[in-house]
Image 1: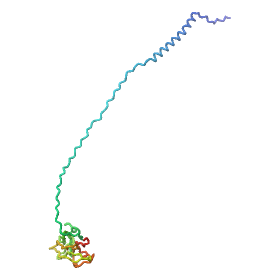
Image 2: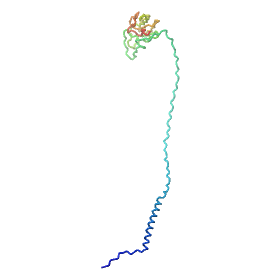
Image 3: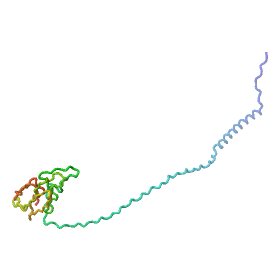
Length: 235
């Protein structure tokens, strides 16, 4: 049987142990210095960066437009209108209040030449061509052959005027009157009414009416034959 081997590690010399004891602290100090240097280098002042220069972008200007100049409108030349100097007619000696008329201020409308010719009418029709104006009244029968209600051949129309003087009881008495006949040879008549010095009724009429000598208070004669008249109520 073999002998057991001796496993005991031989003692390290003293010099080796001393060297190891010195190397361990030296290695730790070197590591500490390296860490401190690295921290100093890492925390040093940051190198200055070059300043960035900002260049302004070019500003685009809007296109310049010139507004059209409106031409001034021509100013019309105002020509002064000459003012006519009104002439004043001499007033009549007496003018009654506006009269009433069955035909208005103008003759009845007549048919044009293109209308068929109307036949005659017995006793015809009388138009007031001019209403009472300063004592004058003009009447006319229809004989032109164009309008209706023509005066029949051979016939004539009785026309007349009558003026009255007012009485104290409100009635009137005949002052003046005149009768004439219109036919195809004399179809018109311009009457000149004779009026009393005081205001009173007057009448222009046609037909076979008799002319009364007196009028009762409020009485109006000649019925539908009146052409132009004034009852004297405005006196």
